[in-house]
Image 1 (cartoon, helix red, strand yellow):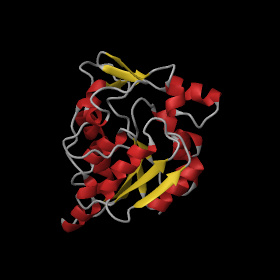
Image 2 (tube, helix red, strand yellow):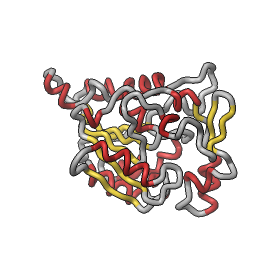
Image 3 (cartoon, one colour):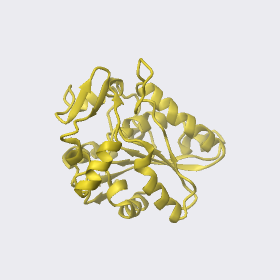
Image 4 (cartoon, helix red, strand yellow):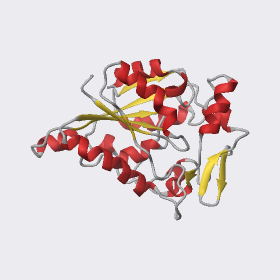
Length: 246
């Protein structure tokens, strides 16, 4: 397990600092330095704002040198990062590379309370065609409504931490939500797992479970009694769940 390199594809709105504690937890457990992908759609200011294609390119730019170095990589995708990661792994999986006589590759994709979109579906499609009530749409940007977001994203934390992490959040490009997905790694021979968050107010468990059915019979799964962001509220428990599904 310690030989695996973890690449984190975050969900919407959250800046890299949200993942720093979990990255430290991975280091203490003996993992090589993990990599958090900075997504162009999060906090972008150059117009037109980036979309799914730019996020996918950002992940692939991280993955390509890693697999070319022969590293075995696990992609950990959170929330909307599930669709980004799904589209980024095409051609980088270990089985395809081995067949081509190349070392390294993606050995598993782990979905953490994340979207597994069927091909040609968009995030907006999965949300019923419009942003959810707690999402604040302002032109080409989407953010969390400050009155609702603390209890939506961080409901398993104390009030002080809820306020802190809600304040740390930024906007995400609306274009990300409108773009259709084009690749299903779980249907393409790439090992995939799911970590459910059973007290999630952002992506309710029933939706997580529905999407995870695409993994087929006897998938590797784990369940955390957490809100949407266990990397903030219970990093040690998340590590255990991660190792269980890998």
